[in-house]
Amino acid sequence: MTDSPSFADHLVAWQKTAGRHDLPWQNTRDPYRVWLSEIMLQQTQVTTVIPYYQRFLARFPDIQALAAAPVETVMEHWAGLGYYARARNLHRCAREVVAHHSGRFPASAAGLEELPGIGRSTAAAVAAFAFGERAAILDGNVKRVLCRYFAIDGFPGTAAVHRQLWQLAESLLPQRDIEAYTQGLMDLGAGTCTRSRPACERCPLTAGCQARQQGRQATLPTARPRPAIPERTATFVLLRDGARLLLERRPPVGLWGGLLVPPEGAVDAVLARLGLRARDCRSLPPLRHSFTHFRLTLEPVLCDVEAAPRLAEPGCEWVALEQAATAGVPTPIRKLLISFINQSSTRRRSADSAVARQAKATK
Ligand code: SF4
Image 1 (cartoon, rainbow, N blue to C red):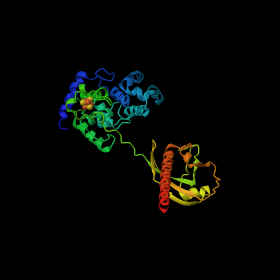
Image 2 (image 1 turned 90 degrees about the horizontal axis):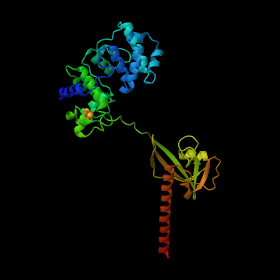
Image 3 (image 1 turned 180 degrees about the vertical axis):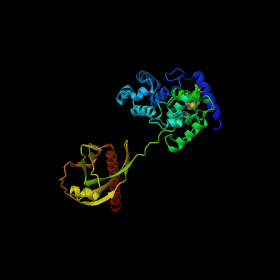
Image 4 (image 1 turned 30 degrees about the horizontal axis):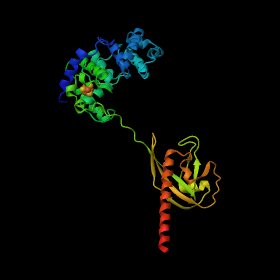
């Protein structure tokens, strides 16, 4: 905050020479027009707003006309501009100003903020442009400029960063030229310090901008943190009958719908469901697989079943071990089966060579 004066000075000087001066809602102090434009410009680009603003004003030239109109007519004139709660609040606000303020907007940011649909930043913008009040705005564009200029880390949506940005926005306000300053912030955010390609070489703040000095324009403001990916665990029972493995077809809907997988669930429950008995069960190394919305840890358990199993369960089939990995199974199951088959063959080879060595030794 040490260079607050220069921040505002640079911005005001730049706005006066290079900023926008001919937008349809500029060059007026009529609070109705200023307010209407500020509401329309929320989340919406200037070029989109201009024709709506002009048509709206032609139909509702003042706050009395807007308050007197049915809400349906207001909605018709807003149709296509999006975020329709704005239009409903606009109408409610007009009626409140007419009914409780004699048709005159309160002449302060604090008073404006009490009205329907007017938040802190919009109240400040209207107060600055209509009444010349020194009030700080902080919309998405201004947040971006401040985060970059002061190299503020942390997602601006978090309470702490949000508070810090409001404090900065207020500390930077110039003693005069509040209109040019406020417009300058808007102009800079919309056309120079843009989200993806900030034009630092022609920015009036370039000398003091920390993001520019640190080469961090692309990573500031900090992006919204990604939600943690949920972790899930599933047990798959590899039921082995000699050289065969039991696979079960999944229901058509849901994860791996219609594909073959080893039966899923706790060992006892799987054996009971399939009417099988196991001689021996042991856990195998787990395998992790990432899906778009979650991570799955597959925990395989190998069970050698007792001889001559007869399956009453529909959708189950015994598959030759060496064909199991290519029998229409999903990718993670294929990886799991390949790993299991490779380990089995390694173990078999080691056992064979141990037997061979022992046979040689006893000769
Ligand atoms: S110098 Fe670049 S990053 Fe910094 S405020 Fe200006 S346009 Fe934005």
